[in-house]
Image (cartoon, rainbow, N blue to C red; front, side, top):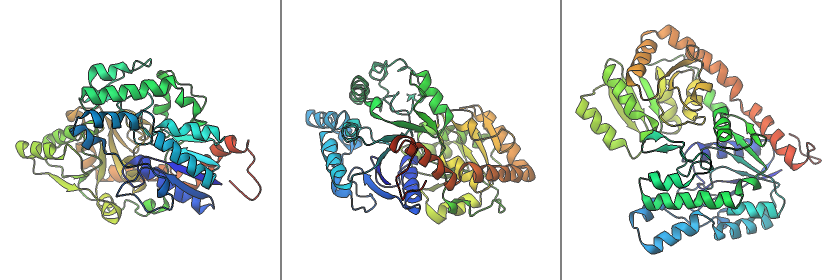
Length: 419
């Protein structure tokens, strides 16, 4: 089977690209052919398909220079990219994919490409990594607060509240994007949607989406993520992720200020890093260490040697890899009771949940888990057992092939191809 993966970035930047490359490798291991469609970027992985990619555009940089020319360019690329449609048409002609699997395409690529897939009768599967279809600001957060004001297709609320980057112009563009895509019925050109969390499916249903074409399928982990078994248990708490306001790191630091006896390592980069480090200095926190961005074996070692992992998110997390990888490494997890996190963590069995934004509740959970090494290890072991079953790559392969085959071959794969 020829599977075309589409994502705005063709390098590891977040959960969407991580899943895309993991799935692509898994499919290749089973004999399927993989192609990519993305945006040109200096960090992209080298691929034979980059000649089809759309031109790079940096929205952050363009937002700094608010000119009429930049504004028109942003509009032309964000709402409906004719270049993307033209280029994907050429790729389809040359490669002739059996399946298109989309991940994160809004803005840089746009759903304009859906018309070409529809034109060529190519089934489209879209893994929903965020809330872009129902929230112009993507993450259902407005000015650091959970926001559902756009429910009922009231996308104009994004402009009224200046949700996008606290910018009126950026919010207008985001609003137009959502309105136009809704009016054009873009979402109906997708054959099946795949949601890593049940929470996301339920939230989309609340916003009026039918669950008939929605499939719940969590992400998976490659076998190498299960190398460490959690037997080495360090004495520090660990945060791994972006340093952004909606990730709840400020709440975590406030909890660390209460439980000053607990060492805490912060792994990651983001726009809030400097302000978070300033907070630590002003609060006299000496138990917090900012490690910076880590990947590969260095990240594995920091995770392997920690005592437990904390995920203090203050937005509707979908199905974060941070929790999955912690469980695979045999680590207990403390997370906020929000979004898809409660369905990942069994309270008192694989970790603890705390009230979002409540540093006192978080500090209490940290002290409980930190003071009982035996209980902590039992939780980590239980989490690992759960991860081995839920996040197994072969189990995921069977499920994704079931989803593909229902649309592509009416449950009958062509001769020579096995699921």
